[in-house]
Length: 286
Ligand code: URA
Image (cartoon, rainbow, N blue to C red):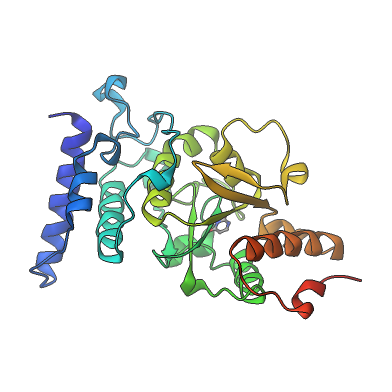
């Protein structure tokens, strides 16, 4: 049995044990889910088999490059299966041995939140201080602005799914305030978990919030977010709309930048065949 498969099995058993302790005696798993679980790509293959055991369970491990096939080729799961599959990934993350930096910073897992059947998935960079405390992405100042933008576009947080590439707040040891950007090795390590979340949700559209999220999805990004925003990209057949990160909007209050983000959201609404009012079309026009 491979190390990766063993780890998945342990995570699954751990999860089922904890459900049992909470009084749950039956778990629904459809034939599709059982089939997916049998496939190696659903196992924690983010850690390449031949990279050796030395680093398998540490956060420094370099993840295997993602599979490039369309996410829509995977079976579409029902909501119960999506829940089970997400719980397995979450449990798997919780079993990863933390790096000394993460242990020291006592960061909490910020896995992702929202509707597993969402048409729209939003992807950010990494949790900040507020998200770390709450265990929920985008709840700080940038998150509140994101929630407003979503509401203006007729979405609420209950009908979208929001996740970050990096699942723990990057440590800021010795730093008095603020957050730091995740390093490339952190992005590379965590990306496969996000990839699996995307595969489970199978959204119709992804909004990439800022350069880090977009860079994670597109791989080598030679063109900056300023040039790419507003132009459809694609990740494993999912249309991706790059836009500015809400924290950039907090720093740059210009009407023109607000309008740009809004135009990106209008494109998302159009792509999802949502009705758009004249009033909505005119927001932030001067
Ligand atoms: N910024 C992000 O990229 N993600 C969060 O969850 C919060 C702030």
